[in-house]
Image 1 (cartoon, rainbow, N blue to C red):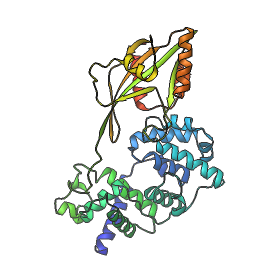
Image 2 (tube, one colour; image 1 turned 45 degrees about the vertical axis):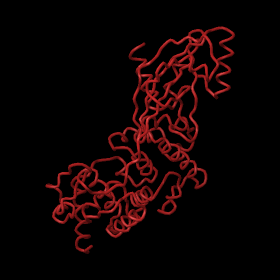
Image 3 (tube, rainbow, N blue to C red; image 1 turned 90 degrees about the vertical axis):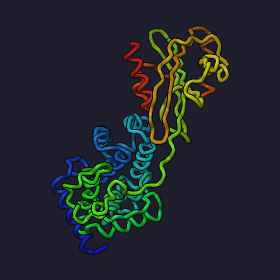
Image 4 (cartoon, rainbow, N blue to C red; image 1 turned 135 degrees about the vertical axis):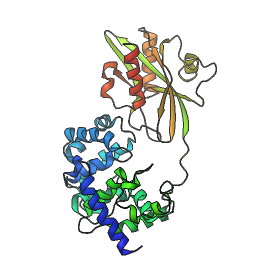
Length: 370
């Protein structure tokens, strides 16, 4: 690859950036905490969706020490709706590490930043260059797309050996005199100009030296390996409720490790392999698990469809009223102990961190039953 083409590329995207960049709050600072927070939020999340979350976190946790001091439930509740909740747990763990082990001082180099939980090559490069002007090139999905098209690289970006090649190319292209600007420029160029589908190549300032444009490879590049297969899950939720005076209580469970939504709360769950189980009778099916008799089914919801990255969820909710007598009271206590369920007041559900699917169900109830 010629030196002239490399220089043209770097100078052109920096010039384009100064004329076209978006006004984003994390670009007006070199505060590493704010930059780190924005980068974690924007992993797997579009700017328009992530912006309110960034503002909410900064308002409630203006420093890394305040984020570290928060309990995990609070952090997850503020994260609710963003998905990929491991990002929030890693963010919280890293904040505690910085606050407790590093005396609240954010690490300043790429290699030290990369030691933070949940921080990989890209995020470490972004933080170290934006906050500390370290000459570390970022390589994310936008960068892969821009580089593969401009230089005509017909190699699978999901393969480790090819990713290394892209990182080396990116490092050769970065403007060492203004690494933060260069990195922002190439990412913004991929986000706004060299977009995945049908980019407007006629107004692209790189067009005259772009290999993909010349060879009509725009729609082909970048090359990605086979996509992960999307699997279906069919979830039957049992919402156990009881009344105590004028208060209504419900049983929730905290989801553990090894599955989706770790650390969030949902209801008692039974899963089946197909959507409409022929002859399915929820109370009889429940008896196989819980040995329950004469429980009152007060509501049966519609089927909710909820899409995750590699899963399609189909969920139905059954509200079960526990009667106010001694036998049912003992059953309520047995449920709590046997399945490690937690009892909370219905009106406090909005304070509990929960998956979007559960919020969809609660919104449905509010619109149709209340």
